[in-house]
Structure formats: C-alpha cells, structure tokens
Image (cartoon, rainbow, N blue to C red):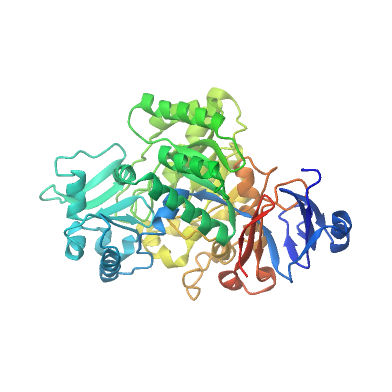
Length: 542
C-alpha cells in the first residue's frame, strides 16, 4: 500500500464484496491503487479521516470488477467493426447485412463479418454461391458465431489460392462439393484458423492497435476490469505491449499462448518453450502471460466437437488433438511451469483433456499451476468428479447457454444428452472451481447479461423464451463470484483482484441500481456508471 496517498471514501452504497468472510458492506476506502478499508460507513469514515475525498454512491450497487475468464481481446475489437450477423435467422437476413456493410464501406478491400449461425443456413451447409449473389468482385470472409467455421465467397477462395487440389490441414477441413471436389466456401476448424492467420498478416499495426483500443473501451464500459485472453499470438501481444508502453492498457490482460496443432511434435514443443519464455518476460499487473492454450476439439453446433457417442445424424468428429499428440506436449508445458488451458466442448474431448492432464501429473508429480478446461458444454457424468480430483478449473460461459441459440445445439445431439448441457452446479458439487467468462467475440462481452443467464438460464437476447434447464441456474451472488473472485483465482490473481477487501487492488464497478433487490430482468437494464482499475476511474457515465 502506498503511504501518503490521498484517500477516497465511497459511501451511501450497497457494496457486494465477493469476500466470503464479509460479502456485504456499506462503504469502503481507497488509498492509491488499493482498497484500504471495507465495512460500515462510520468505521470507514474514521479510517479515512477528515481530509478524505468522499464520493456519494447515492444508493448504487458496487461490485468487484468482472474478470472475463475466457476472452479474445483483439479479436473482440476487430469483430465490433465488422458486419454483425448475430441474430440473423435466414439467408435473406445474412445477405442483407453483408450487402449493407459492403455498401457502407466501399473502400474496404475485403468484407468481414461475424456471428452467423448454422440454424440460419439450410441444412447447416453454407455455400459460396450464396455470397457470390451479394458480392462477386470483393472477397467476403464471414466467421461463424463460434469462430470454428468460416464462410467465404469465390473471390475469397481465389485470393487465398484454395482450390480442389488444396489439401486439408491437420485438424481441419475444406468442405468440398461431393461431385466436383471443388471447395464450397465452408472451412472448418484449423482450416478456418489458417485463413484467420492469413487475414491477420494483411492487417496493419495501426489497425490492430485500433482494434485493441476498441476492445479495451468496450470491456471497461461494461464493467470488465480484467480479461483472460485465450488465444494470444505474436501480433496481438505486440499490440498489447505497445498499448502498455503508451499507458493505454487500462484493462488488465492475463494471457494464454495458443499452441496450434501442426502435426509436428517438435514444432508444438517449440511453441511451449516460447510461451515459457514469454511467461518469464511479461509479468506486469496489466499484461501477464501465464500459460498455453490447446484447442482439443470443435463445437457441437457444427458437429466438430468430439463426442463419446455419435450425433443425431450418426456422425462424429475426431479430436483436433488426439491423446497421443496432446499428452507429451501438455506434460512438457506442465514441466515448464505453465498454466494449461484446454478447449474441450464434447465429452470425448473433455475425457482426452483430463487424460492428458492426468498423464502430466504422473510424469511431473502434482501441479500447482491451476490447469483449466474451457467450455465443457457436455461432460459425461463419469468424468465430472475427475475435475476436482485433478485440481482442474471448469471455465464456462453462461452466455453460450442462452436459449435463443440452443435449438441447433439440441438438434445436433438429439437425445438425453441435451438434458445435461452446461451443467454448472455439477462442477461445483464435485468440488471443482468454476470460472465464468464470455468467450467474446463468439458471444457478447457484457458481464451483466451474462450474469442474468447464469442466474435464470433464460435468454438475454429474448427474455420471453422458456429457460433452458432452469434447475441448473445459480443464485446471483454465486454467479457474480464465479465471474469475479473465482475467475481471478483461476488466473493466479486472487490476492491482487476479484474481491473488495483491504489490501487488494481497487478494481471495481458502480452499477446504477441494486439488481439483487429487483427482478432478474433488471440485470438487462442496469448501466455501469463508473469503472475503476487500480484506484483510478477509467470510465465514468454521468
């Protein structure tokens, strides 16, 4: 704590601290970057002294700053400037939105869009011809809502040189016409990732810096004070370093380096060694590299998630990282002291991820690195208890269970598995730590609607829809803890932020109404009035 710093005293509010020992308070004091005192108004005023600057909260709710436990920061900023296809229900809407964006941006060399859903596309099979009808003279690149598929027009395929002779990459697929073998314009998994990498090469530093600034503004304005970036690469890291050096990285970023599946164990181990060096280099309060990320499978909506039993249509998907490839690289990352995050949505992939982490423990001994599995949309009951046994954090995103996007998800599984989707209470009942995030830009980044879904299992997009498996809803206070204190714990930061108690960094948000005392829908109307990071107000809404 900084001695001699001016004290600010926040009073006349309702303060949810997230601290298990004292979850509620009336007031708190901030000295420099830190919370100095929390408690009743009288005791905080006595601590602060007569010279303290007093800030009247006027009955507003104060929460710890949200820690988005799974995000893609620069990608989120980029997405906010692209054609938004979220909510488009059919091809006509998609064509209209793509055409409108192209008309509004005539100088853009490429049309970028994001957020289309498989349920909006007949038979879930996007085709380049649909986009050619809208735009034939400019490349069109559309990311699916889950960012595991891309939809390209013919001009984009030609720009990339993708033809019938182009081989599928390891862990991915260039979907082809069954009769001609020509690419349809639909790219899955690592094939889509490769295109995204190519587009990143064509993006300038200034464009990337602008995307980062857009994301930082969006996160802070919505109440997120820290984001755990789950796919850091060289370009995004460079933009974050530039922002931090310029004093513009007000958002805290804890990052996992993406280890791509190449099919070469030596190349994959080289990524691990690079990540270990980055973790030793970047250790500040605003930019810290903590570990690595593996994308073990795809998504249920596109039938690319690895399941232990087939989908409703009889198909199944192989893991992008089968156990034989994953286990040695995970063990090497664990030996380097890195925190491991494994994207695993299907129960087959979750089992593979757990097996790989168990192998690492057998090779290296028990780990203190707080390894994690991301998403866990469907987990076989026999594997739930293994999370706690192996000390694995369940990193999940309530917004992915929004009922407005569940129809296709349920249809792809088509059996009793749909009754155990996104089973958050099962994770905590097993003794595992549960961390909440949004996975933006695959879903909206704002945390308060995310908390609405977590505490109701209803739709933030359409609250009139029936709740999806409402018995899995969590109390609001627990939901917020999973999105603050537990997410901070999951990235080794619980002693720095995630709660409001004396001695931690003063990261908090002021919300205009006490959503605890109102109907759940108030979370959808609530506004973040003030966001404070390290004792400094970085966003203020009058």
